[in-house]
Amino acid sequence: MEIIIEDTLTAMAAMLEQPLERRPDALREMMAPTRAAIPMPGDLVDIHHSGGGFRVDADDPRYLPAVRRMIEQDVLGQVRGALTRASERLSGAKRPGLVRVMFALGNPDNEHLMTTAGGYYGMGGGSEWLYLLAWPSDEVIGRIGALAVHEFHHLVRFTNVVWDPVAVTVGEHVLAEGLAEAFVRELLGPEAMGPWSSMVTGEDYERAYELITADFELAGMQHTPAYVLGDSATRNFGGEPRGIPDMAGYAVGLNLVDRVLAATGLTAAEATVLPAAELLRRAGVRP
Image 1: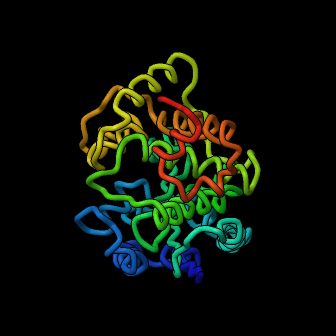
Image 2 (image 1 turned 60 degrees about the vertical axis):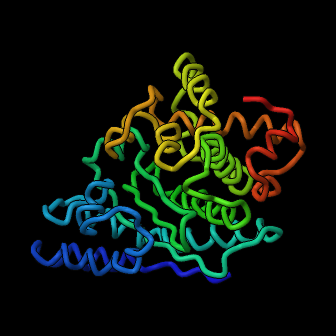
């Protein structure tokens, strides 16, 4: 398997040293290779900004030092190392022949990114591309490699398990997120896990569990993200909120995965190749 990591840190450092009026086109050039893999219509700059990316239409003295810090700490090298380890651990599964990584700096003033998403997030599984976005706070900068592993797990899982946007269910999507975090924990340790699966607890978790499991068989990608990401993200994307606390799908997914792994004795790596319904059947878990 070949891993190609775009040197976006060098590109963004150069971009941030250009006059402001040149930066939008520089961003479009940097992001252009991913365009076919991005499902949203519109200009790449608008998509980048709406997703919490750093602004290319305003100067901010925090941006360039943040990029330089990531270069000094070899964040992209850490991503490569983490992905190499993940690929080796998943060598028993079918893996894509090519994985490409695009990393973008986040906007520290974007409330959804910094508060709801914990400062970083990724997308992966629908193509050979892994897209990572982060603001490199002290809590986040050492976890960007683990974020890449989470998204890589989706890519491998859905190379082995059919992901049909029309037929995929809430249950499959929720289990996929929980299993990706369980794999990060298994490979890199619990300290590498993202904050998403621990954000919702107590009564909020119980309400989320009831709502998510009640619609476990609801199919279609137009529905499932609302149950994973929660109401704030759903509103941001123009969808219909379902009463789900923000990021609750990660907590519910990890809880179900932990029950499955405990009941079956499977590792997260071994569970990667099995559909959610099969994992739950083997474990005797009835959400």
